[in-house]
Length: 341
Ligand code: AHG
Ligand code: MN
Ligand code: MN
Ligand code: MN
View 1 (cartoon, rainbow, N blue to C red):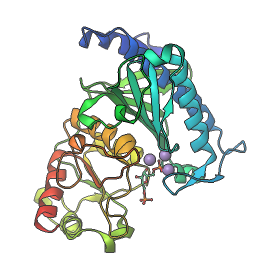
View 2 (cartoon, helix red, strand yellow; view 1 turned 180 degrees about the horizontal axis):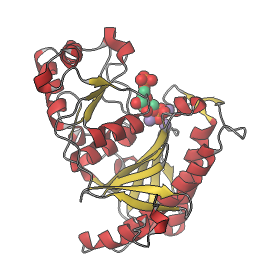
View 3 (cartoon, protein in one colour; view 1 turned 90 degrees about the horizontal axis):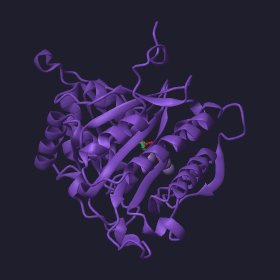
View 4 (cartoon, rainbow, N blue to C red; view 1 turned 120 degrees about the vertical axis):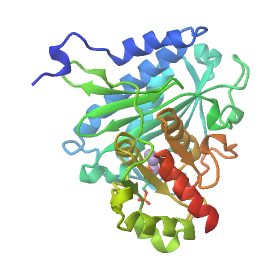
Protein backbone atom coordinates (compact mmCIF):
# COMPACT_ATOMS: atom_id res chain seq x y z
CA UNK A 1 0.00 0.00 0.00
CA UNK A 2 1.35 3.43 -0.85
CA UNK A 3 0.49 6.67 0.87
CA UNK A 4 1.01 10.24 -0.23
CA UNK A 5 4.21 10.37 1.80
CA UNK A 6 5.76 7.36 0.00
CA UNK A 7 5.99 9.49 -3.07
CA UNK A 8 7.69 12.83 -3.45
CA UNK A 9 5.11 13.68 -6.05
CA UNK A 10 2.98 15.46 -3.48
CA UNK A 11 1.27 18.76 -4.17
CA UNK A 12 0.42 20.47 -0.90
CA UNK A 13 -2.46 22.92 -0.54
CA UNK A 14 -0.07 25.84 -0.12
CA UNK A 15 1.97 24.96 -3.17
CA UNK A 16 -1.17 24.48 -5.25
CA UNK A 17 -2.72 27.76 -4.12
CA UNK A 18 0.46 29.68 -4.93
CA UNK A 19 0.75 27.98 -8.34
CA UNK A 20 -2.87 28.84 -9.13
CA UNK A 21 -2.22 32.49 -8.34
CA UNK A 22 -1.14 32.69 -11.99
CA UNK A 23 -4.86 32.28 -12.89
CA UNK A 24 -5.28 35.82 -11.55
CA UNK A 25 -2.65 38.05 -13.18
CA UNK A 26 -3.23 40.96 -10.79
CA UNK A 27 -3.13 38.83 -7.63
CA UNK A 28 -0.66 39.94 -5.01
CA UNK A 29 -0.85 36.84 -2.84
CA UNK A 30 -3.42 38.10 -0.33
CA UNK A 31 -6.00 35.45 -1.20
CA UNK A 32 -3.32 32.75 -1.19
CA UNK A 33 -2.29 33.77 2.33
CA UNK A 34 -5.92 33.77 3.44
CA UNK A 35 -6.47 30.25 2.07
CA UNK A 36 -3.24 29.10 3.71
CA UNK A 37 -4.54 30.27 7.10
CA UNK A 38 -7.89 28.57 6.54
CA UNK A 39 -5.87 25.36 6.12
CA UNK A 40 -3.98 26.01 9.36
CA UNK A 41 -7.17 26.67 11.34
CA UNK A 42 -8.72 23.52 9.83
CA UNK A 43 -5.81 21.47 11.13
CA UNK A 44 -6.20 22.91 14.65
CA UNK A 45 -9.95 22.22 14.67
CA UNK A 46 -9.38 18.77 13.18
CA UNK A 47 -7.02 17.83 16.05
CA UNK A 48 -9.61 18.89 18.60
CA UNK A 49 -12.46 17.03 16.88
CA UNK A 50 -10.39 13.84 16.76
CA UNK A 51 -9.93 14.03 20.52
CA UNK A 52 -13.48 15.14 21.25
CA UNK A 53 -14.47 11.94 23.05
CA UNK A 54 -11.36 11.98 25.26
CA UNK A 55 -11.48 15.47 26.67
CA UNK A 56 -14.32 17.49 28.04
CA UNK A 57 -15.32 19.20 24.82
CA UNK A 58 -18.38 17.25 23.76
CA UNK A 59 -21.84 18.46 24.59
CA UNK A 60 -23.60 21.76 24.93
CA UNK A 61 -21.95 24.97 25.94
CA UNK A 62 -25.16 26.04 27.67
CA UNK A 63 -26.04 28.92 25.31
CA UNK A 64 -28.57 29.29 22.51
CA UNK A 65 -27.19 31.08 19.43
CA UNK A 66 -28.78 33.67 17.16
CA UNK A 67 -30.21 30.75 15.13
CA UNK A 68 -32.14 29.50 18.18
CA UNK A 69 -29.92 26.39 18.35
CA UNK A 70 -28.10 24.85 21.33
CA UNK A 71 -24.47 25.88 21.02
CA UNK A 72 -22.02 22.99 21.31
CA UNK A 73 -18.63 23.49 22.95
CA UNK A 74 -16.95 22.64 19.68
CA UNK A 75 -19.03 25.27 17.82
CA UNK A 76 -17.35 27.84 20.05
CA UNK A 77 -13.92 26.27 19.76
CA UNK A 78 -14.07 26.21 15.96
CA UNK A 79 -15.48 29.73 15.83
CA UNK A 80 -12.71 31.01 18.09
CA UNK A 81 -9.88 29.32 16.18
CA UNK A 82 -11.03 30.37 12.73
CA UNK A 83 -11.44 33.96 13.91
CA UNK A 84 -7.99 33.90 15.56
CA UNK A 85 -6.33 32.41 12.46
CA UNK A 86 -7.93 34.98 10.18
CA UNK A 87 -7.07 37.88 12.47
CA UNK A 88 -3.44 36.71 12.30
CA UNK A 89 -3.35 36.95 8.49
CA UNK A 90 -4.26 40.65 8.33
CA UNK A 91 -5.77 39.72 4.95
CA UNK A 92 -9.38 40.02 5.99
CA UNK A 93 -11.10 43.00 7.59
CA UNK A 94 -14.33 41.44 8.90
CA UNK A 95 -15.99 38.09 9.55
CA UNK A 96 -19.60 36.95 9.61
CA UNK A 97 -20.21 33.70 11.48
CA UNK A 98 -23.22 31.51 12.14
CA UNK A 99 -22.35 31.69 15.83
CA UNK A 100 -22.18 35.49 16.13
CA UNK A 101 -25.15 37.79 15.88
CA UNK A 102 -23.05 40.71 14.61
CA UNK A 103 -20.06 40.82 12.27
CA UNK A 104 -16.60 40.79 13.87
CA UNK A 105 -14.50 43.72 12.67
CA UNK A 106 -10.73 43.65 12.35
CA UNK A 107 -10.46 47.35 11.82
CA UNK A 108 -7.18 47.96 13.56
CA UNK A 109 -3.63 47.93 12.19
CA UNK A 110 -2.95 46.17 8.90
CA UNK A 111 -6.35 44.44 8.81
CA UNK A 112 -8.16 47.70 8.18
CA UNK A 113 -6.44 47.85 4.79
CA UNK A 114 -7.34 44.24 3.94
CA UNK A 115 -9.43 43.76 0.85
CA UNK A 116 -11.45 40.67 1.82
CA UNK A 117 -14.31 39.76 4.12
CA UNK A 118 -14.98 36.21 5.29
CA UNK A 119 -18.25 34.31 5.99
CA UNK A 120 -18.25 31.01 7.83
CA UNK A 121 -20.15 28.20 9.39
CA UNK A 122 -17.35 27.21 11.76
CA UNK A 123 -18.85 23.82 12.57
CA UNK A 124 -21.53 22.39 10.34
CA UNK A 125 -23.57 19.42 11.55
CA UNK A 126 -22.54 20.04 15.14
CA UNK A 127 -25.62 18.33 16.55
CA UNK A 128 -24.03 15.11 15.20
CA UNK A 129 -20.81 15.49 17.15
CA UNK A 130 -21.76 13.46 20.18
CA UNK A 131 -22.39 10.42 17.98
CA UNK A 132 -19.13 10.59 16.02
CA UNK A 133 -20.62 11.50 12.65
CA UNK A 134 -18.71 13.63 10.14
CA UNK A 135 -18.94 17.38 10.59
CA UNK A 136 -17.46 20.25 8.61
CA UNK A 137 -16.55 23.91 8.25
CA UNK A 138 -17.90 26.04 5.38
CA UNK A 139 -16.36 29.32 4.25
CA UNK A 140 -16.79 32.02 1.66
CA UNK A 141 -14.65 35.05 0.73
CA UNK A 142 -15.77 38.33 -0.86
CA UNK A 143 -13.94 41.46 -1.92
CA UNK A 144 -15.13 44.28 0.38
CA UNK A 145 -17.23 47.07 -1.11
CA UNK A 146 -16.23 49.70 1.46
CA UNK A 147 -12.97 51.53 0.78
CA UNK A 148 -9.77 49.95 2.05
CA UNK A 149 -8.63 51.79 5.17
CA UNK A 150 -12.24 52.66 6.10
CA UNK A 151 -14.30 50.76 8.68
CA UNK A 152 -15.81 47.64 7.10
CA UNK A 153 -19.57 47.32 7.62
CA UNK A 154 -22.60 45.18 6.84
CA UNK A 155 -22.68 46.34 3.21
CA UNK A 156 -19.50 44.30 2.63
CA UNK A 157 -21.55 41.16 3.32
CA UNK A 158 -24.77 42.06 1.51
CA UNK A 159 -23.40 40.89 -1.84
CA UNK A 160 -24.94 38.15 -3.98
CA UNK A 161 -23.07 34.84 -4.14
CA UNK A 162 -21.97 35.59 -7.71
CA UNK A 163 -19.46 38.02 -6.14
CA UNK A 164 -17.66 35.30 -4.17
CA UNK A 165 -13.92 35.28 -4.79
CA UNK A 166 -13.41 31.89 -3.18
CA UNK A 167 -15.43 29.34 -1.24
CA UNK A 168 -14.84 25.96 0.27
CA UNK A 169 -15.40 23.49 3.03
CA UNK A 170 -13.48 21.21 5.30
CA UNK A 171 -14.94 17.79 6.08
CA UNK A 172 -13.74 16.13 9.29
CA UNK A 173 -14.58 12.60 8.20
CA UNK A 174 -12.92 9.19 8.03
CA UNK A 175 -10.19 11.32 6.55
CA UNK A 176 -10.11 15.10 6.70
CA UNK A 177 -10.51 16.93 3.40
CA UNK A 178 -10.47 20.53 2.27
CA UNK A 179 -12.34 21.33 -0.95
CA UNK A 180 -12.27 24.81 -2.48
CA UNK A 181 -12.85 26.89 -5.57
CA UNK A 182 -11.73 30.31 -6.70
CA UNK A 183 -13.94 30.11 -9.78
CA UNK A 184 -11.44 28.00 -11.74
CA UNK A 185 -12.69 24.52 -10.94
CA UNK A 186 -13.06 22.63 -7.70
CA UNK A 187 -10.07 21.00 -6.04
CA UNK A 188 -9.92 18.58 -3.13
CA UNK A 189 -7.07 17.96 -0.67
CA UNK A 190 -6.78 15.18 1.87
CA UNK A 191 -4.99 15.76 5.15
CA UNK A 192 -2.04 13.38 5.47
CA UNK A 193 -1.69 13.22 9.27
CA UNK A 194 1.84 11.80 9.03
CA UNK A 195 3.17 15.05 7.55
CA UNK A 196 0.39 17.40 8.69
CA UNK A 197 -0.27 18.65 5.17
CA UNK A 198 -3.35 18.86 2.97
CA UNK A 199 -2.27 16.98 -0.19
CA UNK A 200 -3.96 17.33 -3.57
CA UNK A 201 -6.11 14.22 -3.96
CA UNK A 202 -9.06 15.30 -6.13
CA UNK A 203 -8.08 17.88 -8.76
CA UNK A 204 -10.81 19.34 -11.01
CA UNK A 205 -13.79 17.66 -9.37
CA UNK A 206 -16.78 17.37 -11.69
CA UNK A 207 -20.15 16.10 -10.47
CA UNK A 208 -22.28 13.73 -12.58
CA UNK A 209 -25.07 15.53 -14.50
CA UNK A 210 -27.52 12.87 -13.32
CA UNK A 211 -27.15 10.90 -10.10
CA UNK A 212 -29.09 8.28 -8.18
CA UNK A 213 -28.97 9.63 -4.61
CA UNK A 214 -31.53 11.92 -2.98
CA UNK A 215 -30.92 13.49 0.42
CA UNK A 216 -33.64 15.11 2.50
CA UNK A 217 -34.96 15.01 6.06
CA UNK A 218 -38.04 12.98 5.15
CA UNK A 219 -39.38 13.33 8.68
CA UNK A 220 -40.62 16.76 7.61
CA UNK A 221 -42.61 15.24 4.70
CA UNK A 222 -46.00 16.44 5.94
CA UNK A 223 -44.79 20.06 5.81
CA UNK A 224 -43.10 19.99 2.35
CA UNK A 225 -44.44 21.86 -0.71
CA UNK A 226 -46.48 19.65 -3.07
CA UNK A 227 -43.75 19.75 -5.74
CA UNK A 228 -41.20 18.23 -3.34
CA UNK A 229 -43.67 15.52 -2.30
CA UNK A 230 -44.18 14.69 -6.01
CA UNK A 231 -40.42 14.59 -6.58
CA UNK A 232 -39.91 12.21 -3.65
CA UNK A 233 -42.55 9.86 -5.07
CA UNK A 234 -40.82 10.12 -8.48
CA UNK A 235 -37.49 9.11 -6.82
CA UNK A 236 -39.16 6.02 -5.36
CA UNK A 237 -40.87 4.74 -8.53
CA UNK A 238 -39.39 1.56 -10.06
CA UNK A 239 -38.07 2.36 -13.55
CA UNK A 240 -34.86 0.53 -14.53
CA UNK A 241 -34.40 2.78 -17.60
CA UNK A 242 -33.82 5.80 -15.35
CA UNK A 243 -32.10 3.79 -12.58
CA UNK A 244 -35.05 4.33 -10.23
CA UNK A 245 -35.78 3.86 -7.43
CA UNK A 246 -32.99 6.19 -6.38
CA UNK A 247 -31.08 5.66 -3.16
CA UNK A 248 -31.96 7.74 -0.10
CA UNK A 249 -28.99 8.98 1.97
CA UNK A 250 -29.17 11.62 4.71
CA UNK A 251 -26.58 12.21 7.40
CA UNK A 252 -27.84 15.56 8.68
CA UNK A 253 -24.51 17.36 8.11
CA UNK A 254 -24.79 19.52 4.99
CA UNK A 255 -21.07 19.25 4.26
CA UNK A 256 -21.06 15.45 4.42
CA UNK A 257 -24.31 15.04 2.51
CA UNK A 258 -23.19 17.47 -0.17
CA UNK A 259 -19.68 16.02 -0.46
CA UNK A 260 -20.99 12.49 -1.00
CA UNK A 261 -23.45 13.66 -3.65
CA UNK A 262 -20.80 15.84 -5.33
CA UNK A 263 -18.56 12.84 -5.88
CA UNK A 264 -21.25 10.25 -6.62
CA UNK A 265 -24.05 12.28 -8.18
CA UNK A 266 -27.23 13.20 -6.36
CA UNK A 267 -29.46 15.95 -5.06
CA UNK A 268 -29.58 17.48 -1.57
CA UNK A 269 -32.80 19.25 -0.57
CA UNK A 270 -33.76 21.43 2.37
CA UNK A 271 -37.15 22.83 1.28
CA UNK A 272 -39.32 25.44 2.85
CA UNK A 273 -41.72 23.86 5.28
CA UNK A 274 -44.96 25.14 6.73
CA UNK A 275 -43.13 25.72 10.02
CA UNK A 276 -40.07 27.34 8.36
CA UNK A 277 -41.17 29.05 5.12
CA UNK A 278 -37.57 30.00 4.27
CA UNK A 279 -36.17 26.57 5.05
CA UNK A 280 -33.38 26.09 7.55
CA UNK A 281 -30.08 26.66 5.80
CA UNK A 282 -28.40 30.03 5.81
CA UNK A 283 -27.67 31.89 2.59
CA UNK A 284 -24.37 33.55 3.44
CA UNK A 285 -22.35 30.83 5.06
CA UNK A 286 -24.03 27.60 3.96
CA UNK A 287 -25.93 27.94 0.66
CA UNK A 288 -23.76 30.44 -1.25
CA UNK A 289 -20.41 28.70 -0.75
CA UNK A 290 -21.89 25.26 -1.46
CA UNK A 291 -23.70 26.67 -4.53
CA UNK A 292 -20.47 28.18 -5.87
CA UNK A 293 -18.71 24.82 -5.53
CA UNK A 294 -21.65 22.94 -7.07
CA UNK A 295 -21.72 25.22 -10.13
CA UNK A 296 -17.97 25.07 -10.56
CA UNK A 297 -18.25 21.27 -10.55
CA UNK A 298 -20.91 21.38 -13.29
CA UNK A 299 -23.87 21.04 -10.91
CA UNK A 300 -26.68 23.39 -10.00
CA UNK A 301 -28.02 25.18 -6.91
CA UNK A 302 -31.50 26.64 -6.63
CA UNK A 303 -33.97 27.94 -4.06
CA UNK A 304 -36.61 26.03 -6.01
CA UNK A 305 -37.31 28.93 -8.36
CA UNK A 306 -34.03 30.61 -9.26
CA UNK A 307 -30.29 30.52 -8.91
CA UNK A 308 -29.01 30.70 -5.29
CA UNK A 309 -25.99 32.78 -6.31
CA UNK A 310 -28.19 35.58 -7.66
CA UNK A 311 -30.16 36.17 -4.47
CA UNK A 312 -29.57 39.65 -3.05
CA UNK A 313 -29.04 39.13 0.69
CA UNK A 314 -31.00 41.36 3.04
CA UNK A 315 -29.90 39.93 6.36
CA UNK A 316 -26.73 38.33 7.70
CA UNK A 317 -28.50 35.22 8.97
CA UNK A 318 -31.06 34.96 6.17
CA UNK A 319 -32.36 31.45 5.39
CA UNK A 320 -33.37 30.08 1.99
CA UNK A 321 -34.83 26.83 0.67
CA UNK A 322 -31.96 24.86 -0.88
CA UNK A 323 -31.78 22.33 -3.72
CA UNK A 324 -28.26 21.47 -4.85
CA UNK A 325 -26.39 18.79 -6.75
CA UNK A 326 -26.55 17.07 -10.12
CA UNK A 327 -27.94 19.49 -12.71
CA UNK A 328 -30.65 17.20 -14.15
CA UNK A 329 -31.95 16.27 -10.70
CA UNK A 330 -32.18 19.89 -9.49
CA UNK A 331 -34.00 20.75 -12.71
CA UNK A 332 -36.50 17.93 -12.11
CA UNK A 333 -37.29 19.28 -8.63
CA UNK A 334 -37.63 22.83 -9.99
CA UNK A 335 -40.03 21.62 -12.70
CA UNK A 336 -42.22 19.81 -10.15
CA UNK A 337 -42.17 22.84 -7.84
CA UNK A 338 -43.22 25.10 -10.73
CA UNK A 339 -46.18 22.84 -11.40
CA UNK A 340 -47.09 22.27 -7.74
CA UNK A 341 -45.73 25.18 -5.67
P1 AHG B 1 -25.24 23.64 11.86
O1 AHG B 1 -24.75 22.44 12.62
O2 AHG B 1 -24.11 24.45 11.29
O3 AHG B 1 -26.22 24.48 12.63
O4 AHG B 1 -25.98 23.13 10.53
C1 AHG B 1 -26.96 22.14 10.63
C2 AHG B 1 -27.66 22.04 9.32
C3 AHG B 1 -26.95 21.25 8.24
O5 AHG B 1 -25.67 20.79 8.49
C4 AHG B 1 -27.83 20.08 7.96
O6 AHG B 1 -27.94 19.86 6.60
C5 AHG B 1 -29.15 20.47 8.56
O7 AHG B 1 -28.87 21.39 9.56
C6 AHG B 1 -29.88 19.30 9.14
O8 AHG B 1 -31.10 19.73 9.59
P2 AHG B 1 -32.22 18.70 10.10
O9 AHG B 1 -31.71 18.15 11.40
O10 AHG B 1 -33.45 19.55 10.26
O11 AHG B 1 -32.38 17.64 9.05
MN1 MN C 1 -25.80 25.61 14.32
MN1 MN D 1 -24.38 24.40 9.15
MN1 MN E 1 -22.62 25.44 12.40
